[in-house]
Structure formats: C-alpha cells, structure tokens
Length: 369
Ligand SMILES: *Cc1c(COP(=O)(O)O)cnc(C)c1O
Image (cartoon, rainbow, N blue to C red; front, side, top):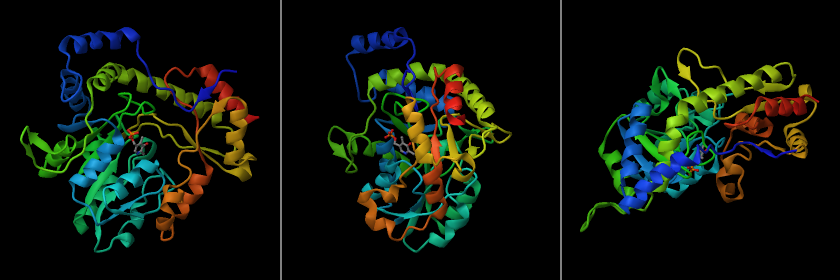
C-alpha cells in the first residue's frame, strides 16, 4: 500500500511556477526585496487584511526577530510547552526565560486563567500559540497584558487564514508570526512573516533586524542578522496564494469526511470545530485525542498500528518542549498537568490537499478495527 504521510506540501501545476521564473531570469535579481517579494508582500496584506507585514526566510527567525525587536532580553516570557520546539527555542535564543503555563482542554491553547499567577516583576511578555489554528482566548489575554503592561507575541504558525470576528487572528497582540514552511497550509517552501495592526518603532526595528540592521550602504542602526525571503520563495507563495480558497475548501471537506466516519468510534475525540459565527477555521490539522479506556489502544499503540499499514500519523505535540533534554533545567519548575495529559494522548491524522475520500475511509477503517 502507498505510504500516506501526515501532510504533503501542495504544488500547483509546474507551468504556474515556471511562468514566474522567466521574470527572475530576465531581471537577474534573486533576493533583497525583489519584484516578487514586493508582490507577495502586497498580496498577503490584501489577503489577510493587515497593513503591516514583514516577510522572512522562515517562521522561526521571524519569531526570534520579533522577540529581539521588542527588547525582552533578560525577562521572563509566559508561554506553553504544547507546541513545536521552535517556540521555546526562539524565546531562549532571544535571551529571555520561558515560564510554562498550562493549556485548556477545550482547544489546547494557553489557559488564560493560569497566566496571572505566573506573572512576576520580571515578566515582559506572553507568547501564546494558536495551536492547530485554534484561536487563543485573545480578549482575556490582551486584558491581562494591558493590566500588567507586558507584550503579547502570538505564535500563529498554524493560523494562516484563520479569522476571528471577521478579521485575521493576526490582528491581535503586539505582533504575530506566521510560518510558510512546506508542511504548513500556505507555504513558500521555507518562509514566514510578522504581522501587526499597531505599526510602531519596534516593528520598524524588526524589519531592520531582518537585514543586518542596516539602513543604508554606510549606516547600521541595530545589530541584526539575515532572515530575508528570496525571489524563488516569493514566487512559490504567489502561485500558492491563488489557490488558497480552494485548498481550504478541500481540506474542510476532508475534515468533514473524517468527522462523519470517526463519530461512532468510542474513545476518539475530534478537535476540529466547525466554523461558526465568530471563527473561520483553516482546517490545517486533524488532531484527535485517544482515550485508552474507551478505545482499547493507547495513542502509541494506535500510532504503531497505523504505521504498520503505511499510514504515518504524527504525535504533534509530543514530547512537550520542556521534556527535550536541552531543557532539563526549565522542566524542574514547570507544572502543566493538562498539557502533559494531552501530549500523551494526542495524534494528528493525515490531512493534505490531494488526500482522497477513499484514503480517508481506509485510514478510518484502520482506526475502527
Ligand atoms: C512550523 C512552526 C514554527 C516554525 O516555523 P518555520 O517556518 O518552520 O521556521 C514555529 N512554531 C510552530 C508552532 C510551528 O508549527
């Protein structure tokens, strides 16, 4: 049987990409704010409805640059361990200390009721994650941040196209990071962006940090790195963006097919909500929670069973970030029982554009018997 991975990058017709390559060859300009970079910048601002946007070579460096640009070095940052290791790494590499907050059981984002008890006089920011594209409880998080005069930086790596009250979820917080990695819903091979509704000196600084901090041939204002997006990435983004609405619609129908076929299986909890009045989802992931007592197998046994049928689900997110050996020091003070419980039971099932209903049925049959 053909191998099915948890995801597969979308690739449009080859001709669509080739058409943009001709322009690159004509211009002989392949990075540093090229024509396609500017086009993608404008197109994404229009698509997302946010005026302040910076393209990056990847999402991780975008997040690291955001934290550096906000001057959080030496401070504590409240975040969750139920995420990709990049979130925690970005905090540590920017010179701050992660303080881990638990997640809530309903949508697996940061439990905002537990944030305030973690705030100290060193706390400088909150870095919540819109995990699987589920919006965090943004109003309450903002209220807490305003009350304590701290920043909010969203890891919105999973949340491309997610809307809350008719507006991009990236409109919330001081700044949000999107990832355009090949495995994400919208990709530029590798890539990412920072977005904000509140233009500020800090956002301008993030733009300069992206390119060595230089403002002219003879002047550097900050000690920046290099995190620029090149023309080949931008070309991929322009092609993929044209297909976005159709790709999300297709993923929605795959999600509904899973929901229908999995609904009668006891012990499998489905997470992806239907879009409702206030939230428009992007159907980027298909997380399910396995309750061993009701289902009969635990998560790891199910993972292995699927693998034996050539179906490669993924344990996103296991381990918790503080359980990686490099964070053994941080682990000592972490107390996140819900994140621990979820991380031991969660499994992301395959979902990608091009996954057929027959394949979904086959995966569900494998889950059933
Ligand atoms: C993918 C991802 C990142 C990093 O993005 P890259 O573009 O791969 O560098 C950060 N946080 C989360 C939650 C992610 O899933």
